Length: 166
Image 1 (tube, one colour):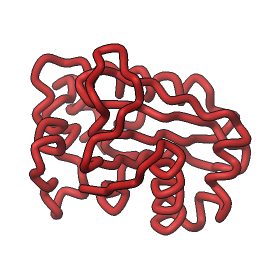
Image 2 (cartoon, one colour):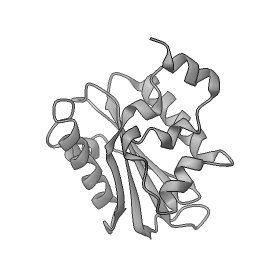
Image 3 (cartoon, helix red, strand yellow):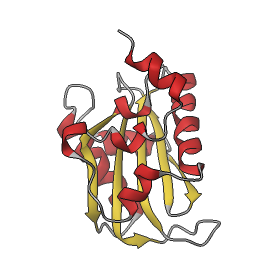
């Protein structure tokens, strides 16, 4: 199975953005996904995502995941935004959201979509999310790693060995 870090291009990590609404966040993230992956995303991805009834789940500790499946997508992609100031999304822990993840994939791959969504949720709930803390604490990801260090510290060692095999 593809690793989460393989779905995230560094150019889809947007830092210190100030969109005022969740729709604004999603529009910016979908526009960025299209700019980075024009051959894999439709130009009107935002409309396709909202037509497909996207879902946002506040995971607590300042993190939220928005996810949707889009019939015109050929590949699952991930984008993330760090909000400054945080956005109040009425999370159960009453903490405003700093990190918003957007996971968008093809309509035909529901099991893959759910596995990635589940894995991302587990990573966000780990006790020491080193990479996520670096995003929340206003440190930039290392450019040469393409955003992968955010997830590398979280990976299961067995999965990391499998992912590195040809």
